Image 1 (tube, one colour):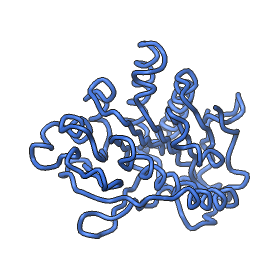
Image 2 (tube, rainbow, N blue to C red; image 1 turned 30 degrees about the vertical axis):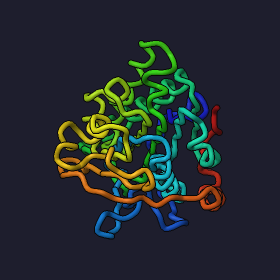
Image 3 (cartoon, rainbow, N blue to C red; image 1 turned 60 degrees about the vertical axis):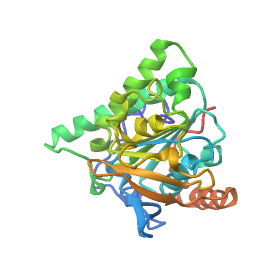
Length: 290
């Protein structure tokens, strides 16, 4: 079941012809391109998150949370999208809590429970696809897109819980990142400390998109983007401290490119949350959990 539902509810695999609950009041869909800012040439920078997974790294106040807020802000205005927030520090995503279908703070047991339930939902959707000889969920299926936003990944991989719990969290995360997009589930995860113990290579390599904001060392930059990119000039440790929101994006098999993301002020987030509460009224299932 999707976290936030009442226990015993069946997986959310609706009749594809029943689209009444997905009227696009805001004109936005989770399947649309999400615009994050501009690239180094001044062109719009956007990502189709419905078919992608994102890994974000960078030091404090480098732009990670602002980048995530742009994505959550878009999804908050969509009636075909579920929002799961997992915030290792609580304070980064707390302003979005009221519009989340489920909110998890720095509690590894609860985080594992949420990812386990999402894995079960994903498996149910794969059964639905298999029965119809299909390879992926698409917008016209009338199935909610499930978006999972994880801020401060390191809390769940190296700080809280036992080694077994941390390994379980990572295994669930990797499964959702690898198989989720085809089932209409995507993950965006961010960490302040991009090191090999926080983001092992096997984890980094399953993410389609990697975003590197300012880092402390070339090695930290390469942990997010991939080994060798710093030597080729794509080094996030060279981003000036007075340029928050500037980062590098590695899009699948391409070369990294520089961009600058939009920053949402607290009052702008409050405005989006209020609008979302009107647009999504009656859609969120279950409240937040601390």
